Image (tube, rainbow, N blue to C red; front, top):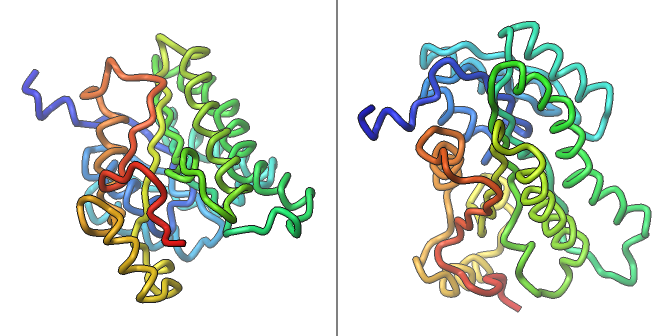
Length: 257
């Protein structure tokens, strides 16, 4: 097989959460370009409908599903619809997640639990739902989108950092549970310039982040999508339980202050 063919996802079916914007959208489109049919799941149906239309324009099949990953019923419905539409499911990308900075003396314990549930519990639950279908299909691949915050020691990120650190370790552990039939890996992005971040980021903070990044720029969503394609494809067939850090070379927090 030519090496380039090992990056193909033809005859594969992927479910991508948080697929309406940003990193999730970029991954969904990359998978489609590589030949996969894609289930685009996110809370805002208009967003995933637009991404699904882009995928169809690439000549692949797509299904848009409104899904809040915090809701057990909506998670199950998304997986059921994926299998009903495409007959199989081979790939899962747990991309939905996130949280802002927090003051550890002010963030309520209940909110801390919510952040863990959103970033870790939802990925665990979706994995449980998808793995039986992957096994029935003869194999599968799971990618968890964690964060550089999982390893940075920085102020005001105790909730988000702890949640992503838990997701990182969950990735390693599930890889042991599901090998050799399924592979489980993660991607830890550094600061990625999404439209939302671009609007919210003060110019001084953006400049500081760039200065503190060896490759002297913020990441783009396609940087993460390319990594996700590698980890999903046969090109990484001997890789499982690993976290790929895509962060411009940062070895400590790039957030100024």
